[in-house]
Image (cartoon, rainbow, N blue to C red):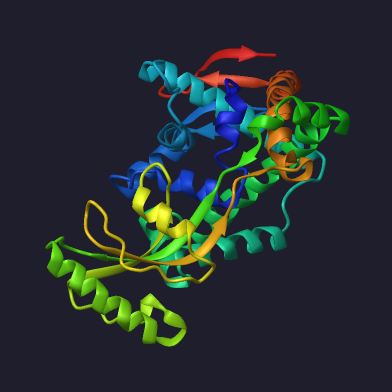
Length: 327
């Protein structure tokens, strides 16, 4: 999407994506440099200063234009500056409407993030690596959740798609809305194909599996000659495994399967045949497709509304003198 706001804003609309953006920030060369960058004002939005530190962080985390498009450092700087101005306008708009995220929301998302990292110890290490204090991390997260709230209210919630349109789209593309066949299994394979010797070894392993509780391949004791793994069996890539798996009942155990890369053993975990998606199953996919251009249009409109709603003043980063003012 071409929207400047969406490309910038979606980096912080959820806890995970927000912290992922922070994680892309390179460690500061020195603490005093970071402090100095916080003092340099690059723009003012309704008299709220945006700093060089914010600009650098956003430049490091904003995605490239993509495709064959290229841009100079100066072009990227202006694109990013425009993005953080729009984010500040959105945050101010949300605050005016009382949509700021509360402590409970922030703590809930923070707990999820900590859990994904591994716990309090890993979270503390993350903060240290990113040169962030606990207060800064919470403030950044609160800001992202608040912007998410105003974007949802003034963009997403205003782009309604009638049920009739979704059903019409479903009927028009029914032949493409297919859930593909899926086969998952536990696979036992030899680390080195030694011809008949490997086949004999595989037969021994199969006998051990058959006598193991629930015929579970994971009960095998590794000896360095084979491995056990969960696998997704694909028809186009694993012809011999696919043909063998199709003959198995759920939790069924195969014989030793000869393949071009050595013997294999499969225990079927799940088989889902190809099927036509119902309207309800396909609805999220259809909604995303139909809603996408409408969201893009409404986002652009909203960006213009935000710009007209506030006073934006761009500053020369080094002299701190006003350079341009927009209504």
